[in-house]
Image (cartoon, rainbow, N blue to C red; front, top):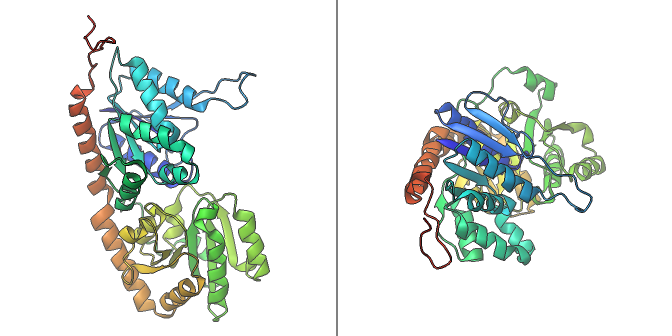
Length: 392
């Protein structure tokens, strides 16, 4: 198949999943065309089957803000016709599904290119923050030829918000060969020069991820005399607040801010406990990646996280903001090496059984094929006039 994929080219979960999906599809013999403003985060190599089409923005003094959604739609239509795409797969409803639908409609007299929309979470919760987005988001879902969601929680939230239930749940995934425990890595010695245990957090440092809670947990764990450091992977608007709180708690020298990293698995593979104190996670991809690296997960019992983390088996779940319990659970794992290792091994087993790429990618391919069948194999559909009569 010739597949067009559009993602936000960031370190967020939707960009990661879309990028790695495209790379895996290409490895399986499909032609993948990424259509985005910049090369997506996890796409490190282009080749015979992996292509990148940059969305070029118009500079015009009339526009206070450049119309990216229109530029994206134009590029999608151009690529779809030039490369004879079989389908457009967009990650995130706003504005990607709207742009894809506009592109599909603009070229359907020549070729009908189905649109598949994958929901990742904040595209749905955005409506909760601003109800004015509800009609256009619902339109994007209704007009898509297929819709998927990354968790059962997100599907249910979409049904409740939009009264739309034609959704296939296809969860996020990991490559078990890439995400794994690393023994004797020089990175461990660099991060823990004095043999410290490593607590690790990975996110885009937005308020919803509650990265400051990680520093609070570190301070409480250290107050019990533990030789431990906190590794903060990523960057974002809350970074300065996290650093300031670390200064206030006198633990700034025990926190390593390593910034955005292309290879998250390297950091997870040398860590001991993963912290995910978010107040909202539609799936919890970071938790899945951590479990694949045999890390017990300390997380909140919200959204899709309970679908990924088994409380009391692969980690411990708490209410949002319950720093005391999360700190106590972290101490339990650090004080009991056998428990920590058992949780890690169980987490990896579950990650591979449920979410290995070899299990999930075929689900996407099967969904593509089903959508193509229902849209006449992606061939041009008959064009009707205003009276519903087929034009000659």
